[in-house]
Each structure stands twice: as structure tokens, then as C-alpha cells.
Image (cartoon, rainbow, N blue to C red):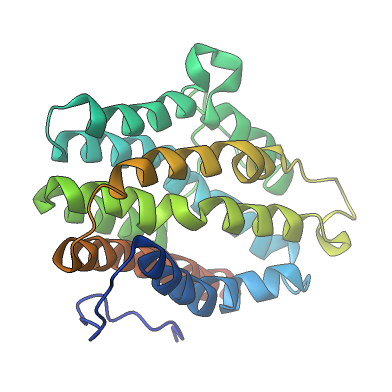
Length: 250
């Protein structure tokens, strides 16, 4: 049963005066629901079996290769002005290895997937021959659904605060957890995909979004930014929590 606080429609009675306050409020949710959540704590403690790590690798593959769709939907949601779409396309360009096929994120992820699920056939397009569970599908569909009706400011906040603010931290923690000796006894997992995001990609992606969001400083605008960021952050928390349940069933 999911343990995460996932009331994404709940409106906190908070009044923000600065963007820094919004950041802290969203990060408090991330700390409670992701960093201290069941999935990440179990991963860091080395508690999962090889079969459960295999399941994680297969399910996250779906989420990862759908993230360019999320970024494309965000580009479609914002006004056709350089200040809005360029930061999002820069993020999308990273997914494409900034033009170098060797740096495609799908290929980077494959190096991890092959070690975690060596028995699974993987297509030339880096898609594993394995069923996709409900957690990964719901996470992608929820993000895309939000962006279909999002305002320009909501779309930027969803990607910035709802994902990139903490993506580097979370992916770094996942990479560190996957280095646990319990997961590397038979073969060493390649965590390059995770650490590249943690060390370089995500901090820059967030800064590009933040540079835009800082221009909106009224209490009403800050509330809009917070609500959008919190909604997507809690959706991601639900993904990890429901994925934990799917992994434990293996």
C-alpha cells in the first residue's frame, strides 16, 4: 500500500513572498516523500533483491525514454517566445546527446539496463522486451495530462520545480544506491547514466528554468509556481512509491 502523501489537488494555506520560499516548500515535500520514501531508503540500504533491481531497471526505462515527450509537451504549452522554449529545448537537446548519437540518453540508460536485466532482449531502439507496469505509465500520463492544460508559467514551473529542482539530487542518490555491494556481486552495474544527470545535466537544466521563474514575484504568481511544482513533484513521488510496491511483488 502506498505510503506517500499524494493529495496533489490540496492547496496549502501558504503565502509566499520570495521564490526561495517556494523552493524550500517544494523541497520539503521531496525530502519527505522521495528522499525519505520507501523506495530510496530501501535502495540505499541494499535491501532489494536482484529480481527487484531488474524490475526497477525495466520500469524506469519506460519513464526515461518518455521524458523527451514530456519536454516536447512543455514546449507546446508555453508561449512561442525564446525566453520560454529555449530552456526546455536545451533540456531536450541533452536527451539527444547534444547531437552526438553516442550521448543519447537512451543509449546511456541501456548500459545500466543490460547489467541489471541481462536476460531481457533489448531492441535496436533500446526498448526492453518486457511489460510496462502501472506506476511508470501513470507517471508519464500524469505529467503529459498536466501539461495539456497548463499555462505558460505552470508548464515552466512543472518542469523546473516539479522535476529539475531535485532530479540531480534524486538521481545521484539512486546512482549511489545502485553501487551498494549487494547489487554488484554477480556483475557490476554501470551507473554512468545516473551520475551524469546528478553531476552535470540536471543542475544546469534547473538553473535555466529558474532564471525565467525568478521574473515572477507577486504572491499570486509564486502560488501558481508552487502549486504546479508541488503537483508534479508529488506525482513523481507516487511513481517511486508505487514502483516500490511493484518491485516488492517480484
